[in-house]
Length: 425
Image 1 (cartoon, rainbow, N blue to C red):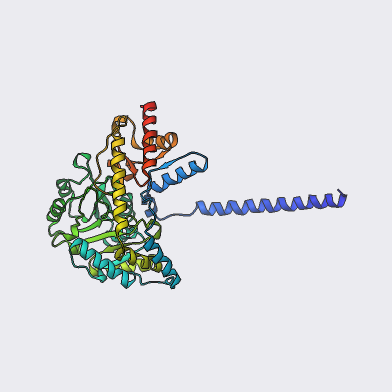
Image 2: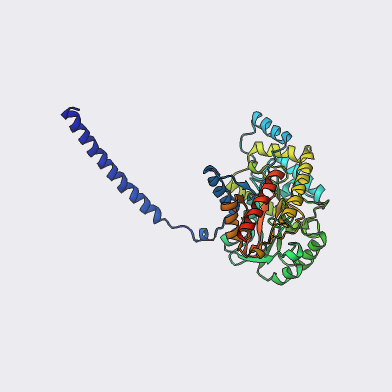
Protein backbone atom coordinates (compact mmCIF):
# COMPACT_ATOMS: atom_id res chain seq x y z
CA UNK A 1 0.00 0.00 0.00
CA UNK A 2 1.41 3.45 -0.95
CA UNK A 3 2.06 6.19 1.63
CA UNK A 4 -0.66 8.27 0.03
CA UNK A 5 -3.23 5.55 0.42
CA UNK A 6 -2.03 4.93 3.94
CA UNK A 7 -2.41 8.63 4.79
CA UNK A 8 -5.84 8.74 3.19
CA UNK A 9 -6.91 5.75 5.25
CA UNK A 10 -5.85 7.50 8.47
CA UNK A 11 -7.78 10.60 7.48
CA UNK A 12 -10.81 8.49 6.60
CA UNK A 13 -10.72 6.68 9.94
CA UNK A 14 -10.30 9.99 11.73
CA UNK A 15 -13.33 11.32 9.89
CA UNK A 16 -15.32 8.18 10.69
CA UNK A 17 -14.32 8.47 14.34
CA UNK A 18 -15.58 12.04 14.45
CA UNK A 19 -18.88 10.96 12.86
CA UNK A 20 -19.21 8.10 15.33
CA UNK A 21 -18.62 10.47 18.24
CA UNK A 22 -21.20 12.92 16.89
CA UNK A 23 -23.67 10.08 16.40
CA UNK A 24 -23.18 8.97 20.00
CA UNK A 25 -23.70 12.51 21.26
CA UNK A 26 -26.86 12.96 19.20
CA UNK A 27 -28.17 9.56 20.21
CA UNK A 28 -27.52 10.23 23.89
CA UNK A 29 -29.41 13.51 23.61
CA UNK A 30 -32.32 11.77 21.90
CA UNK A 31 -32.39 9.08 24.59
CA UNK A 32 -32.18 11.77 27.23
CA UNK A 33 -35.14 13.51 25.68
CA UNK A 34 -37.02 10.21 25.52
CA UNK A 35 -36.42 9.44 29.18
CA UNK A 36 -37.62 12.95 30.04
CA UNK A 37 -40.98 12.30 28.35
CA UNK A 38 -43.88 12.35 30.78
CA UNK A 39 -46.77 10.01 30.15
CA UNK A 40 -50.30 10.84 31.23
CA UNK A 41 -51.15 9.33 34.61
CA UNK A 42 -53.88 7.23 33.00
CA UNK A 43 -51.27 5.17 31.13
CA UNK A 44 -50.05 3.72 34.43
CA UNK A 45 -53.56 2.31 34.95
CA UNK A 46 -53.70 0.54 31.60
CA UNK A 47 -53.49 -3.24 31.74
CA UNK A 48 -52.84 -5.82 29.05
CA UNK A 49 -54.00 -9.18 27.71
CA UNK A 50 -51.54 -11.85 28.78
CA UNK A 51 -52.48 -14.26 26.01
CA UNK A 52 -50.54 -12.18 23.49
CA UNK A 53 -47.53 -11.94 25.80
CA UNK A 54 -47.42 -15.70 26.32
CA UNK A 55 -47.89 -16.24 22.59
CA UNK A 56 -44.87 -14.02 21.90
CA UNK A 57 -42.75 -15.99 24.40
CA UNK A 58 -43.89 -19.28 22.90
CA UNK A 59 -43.08 -18.09 19.36
CA UNK A 60 -39.61 -17.03 20.48
CA UNK A 61 -39.04 -20.48 21.99
CA UNK A 62 -40.17 -22.08 18.72
CA UNK A 63 -37.75 -19.91 16.79
CA UNK A 64 -35.01 -21.27 19.04
CA UNK A 65 -35.99 -24.83 18.11
CA UNK A 66 -38.36 -25.89 20.90
CA UNK A 67 -41.67 -27.54 19.97
CA UNK A 68 -44.59 -25.79 21.64
CA UNK A 69 -48.25 -26.81 21.80
CA UNK A 70 -50.29 -23.62 21.72
CA UNK A 71 -53.23 -23.65 24.13
CA UNK A 72 -52.87 -20.02 25.22
CA UNK A 73 -54.52 -17.89 22.56
CA UNK A 74 -58.30 -17.49 22.32
CA UNK A 75 -58.61 -18.01 18.61
CA UNK A 76 -60.44 -20.69 16.60
CA UNK A 77 -57.98 -22.85 14.67
CA UNK A 78 -60.45 -23.20 11.80
CA UNK A 79 -60.26 -21.25 8.57
CA UNK A 80 -62.82 -18.55 7.85
CA UNK A 81 -65.71 -20.22 5.93
CA UNK A 82 -65.04 -20.27 2.19
CA UNK A 83 -68.22 -18.36 1.27
CA UNK A 84 -67.19 -15.52 3.59
CA UNK A 85 -63.66 -15.41 2.17
CA UNK A 86 -65.03 -15.28 -1.36
CA UNK A 87 -67.39 -12.47 -0.41
CA UNK A 88 -64.45 -10.50 0.96
CA UNK A 89 -62.34 -11.11 -2.15
CA UNK A 90 -65.20 -10.11 -4.44
CA UNK A 91 -65.77 -6.98 -2.36
CA UNK A 92 -62.14 -5.99 -2.89
CA UNK A 93 -62.48 -6.57 -6.63
CA UNK A 94 -65.62 -4.44 -6.72
CA UNK A 95 -63.87 -1.52 -5.05
CA UNK A 96 -65.05 -1.79 -1.45
CA UNK A 97 -61.76 -0.23 -0.35
CA UNK A 98 -62.93 3.23 0.64
CA UNK A 99 -64.34 4.83 3.78
CA UNK A 100 -67.62 3.55 5.13
CA UNK A 101 -70.02 5.37 7.46
CA UNK A 102 -68.62 5.44 10.99
CA UNK A 103 -71.55 3.41 12.34
CA UNK A 104 -71.12 0.77 9.64
CA UNK A 105 -72.50 -0.03 6.21
CA UNK A 106 -76.31 0.31 6.20
CA UNK A 107 -76.65 -3.16 4.66
CA UNK A 108 -74.63 -4.82 7.43
CA UNK A 109 -76.38 -2.87 10.19
CA UNK A 110 -79.72 -3.99 8.80
CA UNK A 111 -78.57 -7.61 8.58
CA UNK A 112 -77.36 -7.45 12.18
CA UNK A 113 -80.59 -5.82 13.38
CA UNK A 114 -82.57 -8.65 11.81
CA UNK A 115 -80.22 -11.27 13.28
CA UNK A 116 -80.39 -9.88 16.82
CA UNK A 117 -84.17 -9.44 16.57
CA UNK A 118 -84.48 -13.09 15.60
CA UNK A 119 -82.01 -14.58 18.09
CA UNK A 120 -82.84 -12.41 21.13
CA UNK A 121 -86.57 -12.14 20.57
CA UNK A 122 -86.65 -8.34 20.63
CA UNK A 123 -87.27 -5.68 18.00
CA UNK A 124 -84.00 -4.11 16.89
CA UNK A 125 -83.60 -1.48 14.19
CA UNK A 126 -80.46 -0.60 12.25
CA UNK A 127 -80.03 2.73 14.08
CA UNK A 128 -79.35 0.71 17.24
CA UNK A 129 -76.35 -1.07 15.67
CA UNK A 130 -72.77 0.21 15.63
CA UNK A 131 -70.16 -1.78 13.69
CA UNK A 132 -66.60 -1.66 15.03
CA UNK A 133 -63.21 -3.29 14.26
CA UNK A 134 -63.44 -6.24 16.67
CA UNK A 135 -65.26 -6.61 19.98
CA UNK A 136 -62.94 -4.59 22.22
CA UNK A 137 -63.99 -1.14 20.95
CA UNK A 138 -67.49 -1.74 22.32
CA UNK A 139 -65.98 -2.40 25.75
CA UNK A 140 -63.80 0.70 25.48
CA UNK A 141 -66.51 2.96 24.07
CA UNK A 142 -69.11 1.84 26.60
CA UNK A 143 -66.83 2.65 29.52
CA UNK A 144 -65.65 5.93 27.97
CA UNK A 145 -69.24 7.00 27.31
CA UNK A 146 -70.77 6.04 30.66
CA UNK A 147 -68.11 6.11 33.39
CA UNK A 148 -66.78 9.22 35.10
CA UNK A 149 -63.98 9.23 37.65
CA UNK A 150 -65.08 7.45 40.81
CA UNK A 151 -68.07 5.71 39.19
CA UNK A 152 -68.30 2.01 39.99
CA UNK A 153 -68.39 -0.84 37.48
CA UNK A 154 -69.15 -4.39 38.58
CA UNK A 155 -67.36 -6.97 36.44
CA UNK A 156 -66.81 -10.77 36.54
CA UNK A 157 -63.59 -12.06 38.08
CA UNK A 158 -61.95 -14.18 36.79
CA UNK A 159 -62.92 -12.48 33.57
CA UNK A 160 -61.69 -10.96 30.34
CA UNK A 161 -58.83 -8.68 31.51
CA UNK A 162 -59.74 -5.74 29.28
CA UNK A 163 -62.83 -5.02 31.41
CA UNK A 164 -60.79 -4.14 34.48
CA UNK A 165 -58.08 -2.44 32.43
CA UNK A 166 -60.53 -0.01 30.82
CA UNK A 167 -62.34 0.73 34.10
CA UNK A 168 -59.06 1.72 35.72
CA UNK A 169 -57.96 3.64 32.63
CA UNK A 170 -60.89 6.07 32.79
CA UNK A 171 -60.57 6.48 36.56
CA UNK A 172 -63.55 4.35 37.47
CA UNK A 173 -63.70 2.02 40.46
CA UNK A 174 -63.51 -1.63 39.43
CA UNK A 175 -65.73 -3.82 41.64
CA UNK A 176 -65.08 -7.54 41.03
CA UNK A 177 -67.77 -10.13 41.52
CA UNK A 178 -66.16 -13.55 42.08
CA UNK A 179 -67.13 -16.48 39.86
CA UNK A 180 -66.87 -19.60 41.99
CA UNK A 181 -66.13 -23.11 40.87
CA UNK A 182 -68.81 -24.61 43.16
CA UNK A 183 -71.40 -22.66 41.15
CA UNK A 184 -69.97 -23.81 37.80
CA UNK A 185 -68.50 -20.30 37.54
CA UNK A 186 -71.89 -18.62 37.32
CA UNK A 187 -72.11 -15.47 39.43
CA UNK A 188 -74.06 -15.51 42.69
CA UNK A 189 -77.02 -13.16 42.33
CA UNK A 190 -76.96 -12.41 46.08
CA UNK A 191 -73.29 -11.40 45.78
CA UNK A 192 -74.24 -9.06 42.97
CA UNK A 193 -77.03 -7.47 45.01
CA UNK A 194 -74.59 -6.74 47.84
CA UNK A 195 -72.15 -4.99 45.49
CA UNK A 196 -74.57 -2.55 43.86
CA UNK A 197 -74.26 0.91 45.38
CA UNK A 198 -75.35 4.47 44.64
CA UNK A 199 -72.12 4.84 42.62
CA UNK A 200 -72.76 1.79 40.40
CA UNK A 201 -73.19 2.87 36.79
CA UNK A 202 -72.46 -0.29 34.83
CA UNK A 203 -72.57 -4.07 35.31
CA UNK A 204 -70.60 -6.25 32.88
CA UNK A 205 -71.89 -9.73 32.12
CA UNK A 206 -70.20 -12.34 29.95
CA UNK A 207 -71.97 -15.54 28.96
CA UNK A 208 -70.67 -17.98 27.77
CA UNK A 209 -67.72 -16.79 29.78
CA UNK A 210 -64.01 -16.35 29.18
CA UNK A 211 -61.98 -17.93 30.83
CA UNK A 212 -64.21 -20.38 32.71
CA UNK A 213 -66.78 -21.51 30.15
CA UNK A 214 -69.52 -20.70 32.66
CA UNK A 215 -73.00 -19.78 31.46
CA UNK A 216 -75.67 -17.51 32.93
CA UNK A 217 -79.04 -19.26 32.74
CA UNK A 218 -82.31 -17.51 31.95
CA UNK A 219 -83.54 -17.52 35.55
CA UNK A 220 -80.31 -15.96 36.79
CA UNK A 221 -80.53 -13.18 34.22
CA UNK A 222 -84.14 -12.51 35.18
CA UNK A 223 -83.06 -12.27 38.82
CA UNK A 224 -80.29 -9.82 37.89
CA UNK A 225 -82.88 -7.65 36.15
CA UNK A 226 -85.06 -7.77 39.27
CA UNK A 227 -82.16 -6.76 41.49
CA UNK A 228 -81.31 -3.76 39.31
CA UNK A 229 -84.91 -2.65 39.39
CA UNK A 230 -85.33 1.02 38.55
CA UNK A 231 -81.74 1.99 39.44
CA UNK A 232 -79.82 4.07 36.91
CA UNK A 233 -77.54 1.16 35.98
CA UNK A 234 -76.65 -0.05 32.49
CA UNK A 235 -75.60 -3.56 31.46
CA UNK A 236 -72.77 -4.40 29.07
CA UNK A 237 -73.61 -7.93 27.96
CA UNK A 238 -70.61 -9.55 26.28
CA UNK A 239 -72.09 -12.34 24.15
CA UNK A 240 -69.17 -12.94 21.81
CA UNK A 241 -69.39 -16.72 22.43
CA UNK A 242 -73.19 -16.92 22.08
CA UNK A 243 -73.03 -19.45 19.23
CA UNK A 244 -70.58 -21.71 21.08
CA UNK A 245 -72.81 -23.44 23.63
CA UNK A 246 -72.45 -27.17 24.28
CA UNK A 247 -74.76 -30.09 25.07
CA UNK A 248 -77.70 -28.51 23.27
CA UNK A 249 -77.65 -25.37 25.42
CA UNK A 250 -79.61 -22.37 24.19
CA UNK A 251 -78.29 -18.86 24.56
CA UNK A 252 -80.39 -16.34 26.48
CA UNK A 253 -79.58 -12.64 26.68
CA UNK A 254 -80.51 -10.19 29.43
CA UNK A 255 -81.59 -7.97 26.54
CA UNK A 256 -84.50 -10.40 26.12
CA UNK A 257 -85.82 -9.77 29.65
CA UNK A 258 -88.80 -7.39 29.50
CA UNK A 259 -87.74 -3.84 30.30
CA UNK A 260 -84.02 -4.50 29.85
CA UNK A 261 -83.47 -3.84 26.15
CA UNK A 262 -82.99 -0.07 26.50
CA UNK A 263 -80.63 -0.62 29.44
CA UNK A 264 -78.44 -3.21 27.70
CA UNK A 265 -75.44 -2.77 25.43
CA UNK A 266 -75.03 -6.07 23.61
CA UNK A 267 -71.52 -6.91 22.42
CA UNK A 268 -71.13 -9.55 19.74
CA UNK A 269 -68.98 -10.15 16.71
CA UNK A 270 -67.62 -12.40 14.02
CA UNK A 271 -64.22 -13.46 15.43
CA UNK A 272 -65.26 -16.52 17.44
CA UNK A 273 -68.39 -17.60 15.56
CA UNK A 274 -66.95 -17.45 12.05
CA UNK A 275 -63.21 -17.82 12.79
CA UNK A 276 -62.66 -14.23 11.64
CA UNK A 277 -60.27 -12.96 14.34
CA UNK A 278 -57.95 -11.30 11.83
CA UNK A 279 -60.79 -9.61 9.95
CA UNK A 280 -61.51 -7.35 12.96
CA UNK A 281 -65.28 -7.16 12.82
CA UNK A 282 -67.58 -6.72 15.80
CA UNK A 283 -70.65 -4.77 16.75
CA UNK A 284 -72.72 -3.35 19.57
CA UNK A 285 -76.49 -3.08 19.87
CA UNK A 286 -77.91 -0.37 22.12
CA UNK A 287 -80.54 2.35 22.39
CA UNK A 288 -80.32 4.84 19.49
CA UNK A 289 -79.17 7.84 21.54
CA UNK A 290 -76.22 5.88 22.96
CA UNK A 291 -75.49 4.48 19.50
CA UNK A 292 -75.05 8.06 18.32
CA UNK A 293 -72.42 8.69 20.98
CA UNK A 294 -70.66 5.40 20.14
CA UNK A 295 -70.60 6.48 16.50
CA UNK A 296 -68.86 9.74 17.45
CA UNK A 297 -66.26 7.73 19.36
CA UNK A 298 -65.75 5.64 16.22
CA UNK A 299 -65.34 8.79 14.15
CA UNK A 300 -62.76 10.13 16.59
CA UNK A 301 -60.77 6.89 16.90
CA UNK A 302 -61.05 4.59 13.88
CA UNK A 303 -63.08 6.61 11.35
CA UNK A 304 -64.75 3.38 10.27
CA UNK A 305 -64.44 -0.38 9.98
CA UNK A 306 -62.93 -1.71 6.72
CA UNK A 307 -65.58 -1.76 4.01
CA UNK A 308 -64.67 -5.08 2.38
CA UNK A 309 -64.66 -6.74 5.81
CA UNK A 310 -68.20 -5.53 6.39
CA UNK A 311 -69.35 -6.90 3.04
CA UNK A 312 -67.93 -10.27 4.08
CA UNK A 313 -69.82 -9.89 7.36
CA UNK A 314 -73.12 -9.64 5.50
CA UNK A 315 -72.39 -13.00 3.87
CA UNK A 316 -71.40 -14.49 7.23
CA UNK A 317 -74.68 -13.47 8.85
CA UNK A 318 -77.00 -14.26 5.96
CA UNK A 319 -75.16 -17.14 4.30
CA UNK A 320 -74.69 -20.84 5.03
CA UNK A 321 -74.31 -21.54 8.77
CA UNK A 322 -73.23 -25.19 8.76
CA UNK A 323 -69.60 -24.21 9.42
CA UNK A 324 -70.63 -22.68 12.75
CA UNK A 325 -72.38 -25.86 13.84
CA UNK A 326 -69.44 -27.98 12.73
CA UNK A 327 -66.96 -25.85 14.66
CA UNK A 328 -69.11 -25.92 17.81
CA UNK A 329 -69.46 -29.70 17.64
CA UNK A 330 -65.72 -30.12 17.17
CA UNK A 331 -64.99 -27.87 20.15
CA UNK A 332 -67.36 -29.99 22.22
CA UNK A 333 -65.50 -33.18 21.27
CA UNK A 334 -62.21 -31.56 22.18
CA UNK A 335 -63.62 -30.25 25.45
CA UNK A 336 -64.84 -33.70 26.43
CA UNK A 337 -61.52 -35.33 25.70
CA UNK A 338 -59.36 -32.64 27.30
CA UNK A 339 -61.37 -32.33 30.51
CA UNK A 340 -61.38 -36.11 30.92
CA UNK A 341 -57.63 -36.16 30.40
CA UNK A 342 -56.97 -33.34 32.86
CA UNK A 343 -58.98 -35.12 35.54
CA UNK A 344 -56.67 -38.11 35.15
CA UNK A 345 -53.56 -36.01 35.83
CA UNK A 346 -52.19 -35.89 39.35
CA UNK A 347 -53.46 -32.88 41.37
CA UNK A 348 -55.54 -31.47 38.50
CA UNK A 349 -59.33 -31.25 38.64
CA UNK A 350 -61.58 -29.69 36.05
CA UNK A 351 -65.28 -29.02 35.71
CA UNK A 352 -66.97 -29.41 32.34
CA UNK A 353 -67.42 -25.94 30.78
CA UNK A 354 -70.79 -25.24 29.20
CA UNK A 355 -69.62 -22.92 26.43
CA UNK A 356 -66.81 -21.02 24.67
CA UNK A 357 -63.65 -23.08 23.93
CA UNK A 358 -61.71 -22.92 27.17
CA UNK A 359 -61.20 -25.23 30.12
CA UNK A 360 -60.29 -23.87 33.54
CA UNK A 361 -58.80 -26.59 35.77
CA UNK A 362 -58.19 -26.20 39.49
CA UNK A 363 -54.48 -26.72 40.28
CA UNK A 364 -54.42 -25.85 43.99
CA UNK A 365 -53.52 -29.42 44.96
CA UNK A 366 -50.29 -29.17 42.99
CA UNK A 367 -48.96 -26.78 45.63
CA UNK A 368 -48.01 -24.31 42.89
CA UNK A 369 -49.30 -20.80 42.31
CA UNK A 370 -50.89 -20.29 38.91
CA UNK A 371 -48.29 -18.07 37.23
CA UNK A 372 -45.18 -20.11 38.18
CA UNK A 373 -46.92 -23.32 37.11
CA UNK A 374 -47.95 -21.86 33.76
CA UNK A 375 -44.37 -20.68 33.24
CA UNK A 376 -42.89 -24.09 34.06
CA UNK A 377 -45.31 -25.92 31.78
CA UNK A 378 -44.27 -23.63 28.93
CA UNK A 379 -40.55 -23.79 29.60
CA UNK A 380 -40.19 -27.46 30.57
CA UNK A 381 -43.21 -29.25 29.06
CA UNK A 382 -43.63 -27.11 25.95
CA UNK A 383 -47.32 -26.46 26.65
CA UNK A 384 -48.46 -22.84 26.44
CA UNK A 385 -51.32 -22.04 28.84
CA UNK A 386 -52.40 -18.98 30.79
CA UNK A 387 -52.31 -18.40 34.50
CA UNK A 388 -55.72 -17.93 36.05
CA UNK A 389 -54.42 -14.68 37.51
CA UNK A 390 -54.22 -13.28 33.98
CA UNK A 391 -57.99 -12.96 34.42
CA UNK A 392 -58.01 -11.35 37.85
CA UNK A 393 -57.26 -12.04 41.49
CA UNK A 394 -59.93 -14.73 41.81
CA UNK A 395 -58.23 -16.71 39.05
CA UNK A 396 -55.49 -17.80 41.45
CA UNK A 397 -55.42 -21.57 41.72
CA UNK A 398 -56.45 -22.15 38.09
CA UNK A 399 -55.01 -22.37 34.59
CA UNK A 400 -56.76 -21.62 31.32
CA UNK A 401 -56.28 -23.89 28.33
CA UNK A 402 -57.82 -23.17 24.94
CA UNK A 403 -59.09 -26.28 23.14
CA UNK A 404 -58.82 -24.46 19.81
CA UNK A 405 -56.27 -26.98 18.63
CA UNK A 406 -56.45 -30.44 17.08
CA UNK A 407 -57.35 -33.55 19.06
CA UNK A 408 -53.88 -34.87 18.30
CA UNK A 409 -52.16 -31.82 19.74
CA UNK A 410 -54.48 -31.74 22.74
CA UNK A 411 -53.57 -35.34 23.52
CA UNK A 412 -49.89 -34.52 23.18
CA UNK A 413 -50.37 -31.63 25.60
CA UNK A 414 -52.05 -33.92 28.12
CA UNK A 415 -49.19 -36.41 27.83
CA UNK A 416 -46.60 -33.68 28.38
CA UNK A 417 -48.42 -32.25 31.40
CA UNK A 418 -48.83 -35.73 32.86
CA UNK A 419 -45.13 -36.48 32.43
CA UNK A 420 -44.17 -33.15 33.99
CA UNK A 421 -46.37 -33.66 37.02
CA UNK A 422 -44.98 -37.15 37.61
CA UNK A 423 -41.47 -35.72 37.67
CA UNK A 424 -42.17 -32.57 39.68
CA UNK A 425 -45.10 -33.17 42.04
